[in-house]
Image (cartoon, rainbow, N blue to C red; front, side):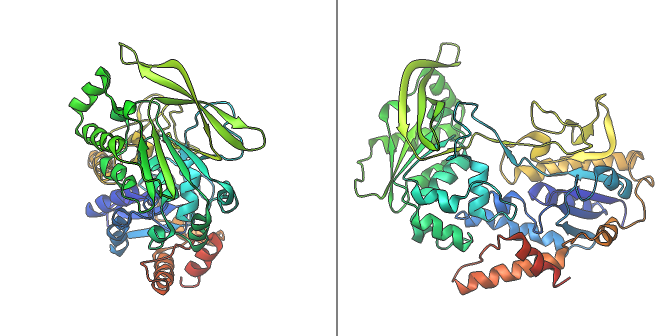
Length: 451
């Protein structure tokens, strides 16, 4: 093998980077703080989207390559420093994503019952480090929900909360999550966007699924899909926006389904201004908005009140800083040029690279990360060819062995394979592909007994 590279993060960006590096002759260790790989493919993609989640079967093949190792249950910045990685490898590629959420910055946001979509998604996907609100208790008394945001994650949340137990039974959600969702008395779900339907960022496929649910009805106010000049221009320029508006306009004309168990109401041009409640959320205040002549969003002076028991904010992901690495607080990304991390003087830091959401922000689809990772690997290999990387900067010491000697329960590929097998066996017993093991202690027990 040629150079030795550490990749930090085993989501799509990290694994695409590992694959591209290995194709160029590099030995690659892929670090992840979790005992299992795949990042948001496992803990972000909605469990009922089996076709999208199945991309992990493709990603999983990287572990069959000679010279590629999984180094799970190791947190960079805590268990091992970035300086230790840089000393042990010729290069380090940071691909740890954007795991934090953005806030609404309105009064009442910290009331019990006001939650981040990142928390709800982590709970229903079985994230082993989930420490957020107790949804098993909270959802027992939730009848009305407001989901703020009009991206795919917001639509995922609306769909999961609105599906019947039968529609979720085939997913790999942990059993306690399925039981909680089946018992939740949700009757009303509001989807709220500050701008109009032409400016929404969800994709048409995900949007249309809301209108195909077995026991839920979608309500759209006709006035919300009447296009102003700003929106007409957006529709003319953007095919996805045009398709979305068409779907929403069709829903606005549909006859209501009074027998539906759940009503999904879509609100556009509605900006949250205050979350109401004393000991817990009881309502949400909205300000109606519109576009002015310059295309800026302005308030109309009209207000609307929603009685809700739960508010889920889904207004975007945000990256977090890693100790010892430059960070752009305003954008929530690591400053870089073509994947080369830039220091305080805006000059590239030798041997340090970045790819994925922590490189460019939370945008694009899973496949976007492949192009992003390949670009970064291209920059890295240019530096190898120029002699600035791979000139003996990496040591012959196996850092993974050192970590195990420190008492860290490193999970390698055999440990992951053992977890994978247990999940598939539990799924087969329930007539589905797998059941996610959500408890970290159990994941480690399964993994470490086979290594």
